[in-house]
Length: 107
Length: 186
Image 1 (tube, each protein chain N blue to C red):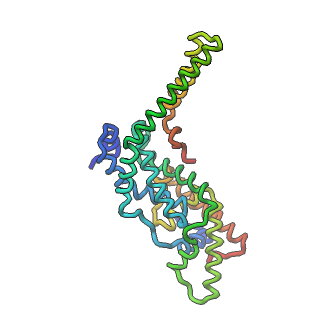
Image 2: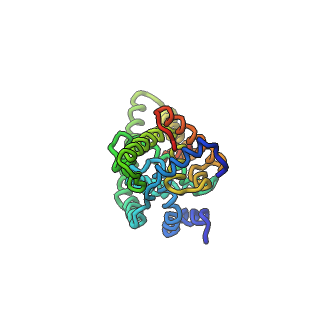
Image 3: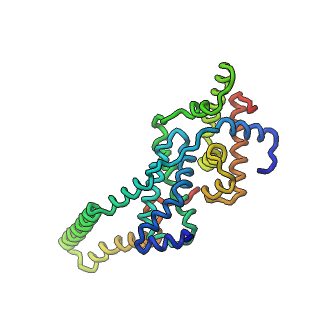
């Protein structure tokens, strides 16, 4: 550290005294617990959720298409109405993958 | 020894032991950074943050393109994760009172002197909590977790001079705040 002015040196020594405490560390079984969590995340349940989500998405697309067709829209407009937002989401995911995992900037 | 980017490439091609090696390398700094943000009252929460960070990293590693260092990337995730959690646990009662922990390692002679010191330490802890997150984190890393300026800079993702100025500014602010409350620093 560079030289401090007296009042900064005072607060420095107060902080040293006041904040001195045992340094915590991770429990020894941290790695095992983490690996267990990871393997649980990639189990069949995860695949099952994914299948459900895809099924739900497909049902929504079909229902929307049928309703829009019932309103007299042509297939071109229906495709644009469905594929437009989907491609926007895909493009945003590709461009900013970190945002989707809440990984923003530090400050 | 393999570099982080080589390990990342191996993980991206499906090699799980390479991920375990990345965890082994980075678990301690990730935990230290999380603890420095959450404070000593929330150490179990810091463990949860560390676990959550590695789960996120595992999930997102496919999209890691190596524009930045792997360590900077993981520390940034940790910082955001810990700050988000801190906002949620702020109103929950802490697991331990900070001043009780201080007393455990720095006993003072005489009951009146002890009470005075405890009061000032409590005031100091309150003042620290009003500082910006990066200042709080820098202070805890430097004064509690025994990190050097270089480590503070690395974990906060800033140049060394910026880390020094965080510490300098934090000390100045604390000095002023304590003075305002009528405490001396000697």
